[in-house]
Amino acid sequence: MREGAVPASLAAEAYTFVKQRILRGELVMGQAISRRKLAAELGMSFLPVSEALLRLEFEGLLESRPRAGTRVRIPSREDVRGHYVVREALEVQAAMLFAAVATADDRAELQKLAARVDALSVSDQSLYLPAHEKLHRRIAECARCPALSAAIEKTHALASTWFCVTRPPSAENPPRRHQDLVDVLVTGDVATVAEAMRQHVNLSLENGRGQGSGTSV
Image (cartoon, rainbow, N blue to C red; front, side, top):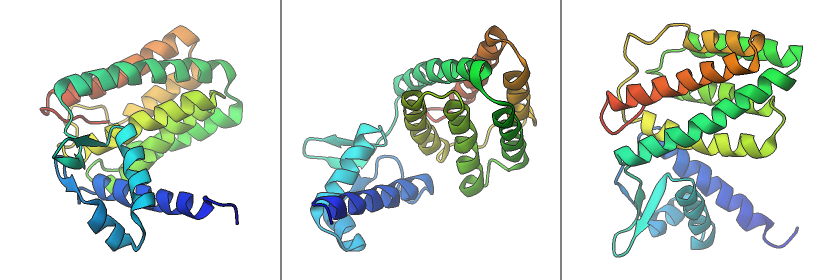
C-alpha cells in the first residue's frame, strides 16, 4: 500500500463524519470542536483528524481562533452576502455553459432531478439537501468544466450548513421553483438562462435576509 494512503482515507472519514454532524445540527454554530475527543470517538490519531478539520476550515465550515481553538463557524451578514456574490457568479456561468453544451440526455436528467427536489419537503433536510446539491452539481458537471464544478460544490457546503439553522423558506416561494429554473435552462438562450439563474440565486439571498443571519437554498 502506498505510504500515506491510509491516513488520507482516515482523513476523508473524519471529514465526512464532522461535516454530516454539522449538517444534521448535532454540531451547532459556535460549538467548539475537540480534536482529542473526535480522535477518540473515531478511533484514530490526531493527524487525520487535524487534516479533516483543516479541510473544513478551508471550506468555511469551521474557524480557528487563538486561545479559542476550532469551532463551527458563525457567518456574519457580510459572510452571507459575499457567499452569494460568489455563488451567483459561479452558478450563472455554469448555467450559460450548460445551455451551450448540454446534451439531450443531460437536459432530460436535469428535468427529472428538478422535479424530485420540488417534490421534497424542505423540512426533511436529510433528503432535501442532498437532492438539491445534486441538481446544482449536475448543472455544473454538464457544463463540462471540472474546476467550476469543484468551486460550486464548495459554495453548497456552506449553503447547506447555514440552511440547517434557519426556518424553511416562506410559503411565498414558488412550488415549482427548481422545475421552472430547469425549464429555462433546457430551452432558453444563453442570456435568458443567465438571468433565470441570477434570479434563482438572489431569491435565496433574499430569503436569508428575511431569516436573520442564516440563509435558505
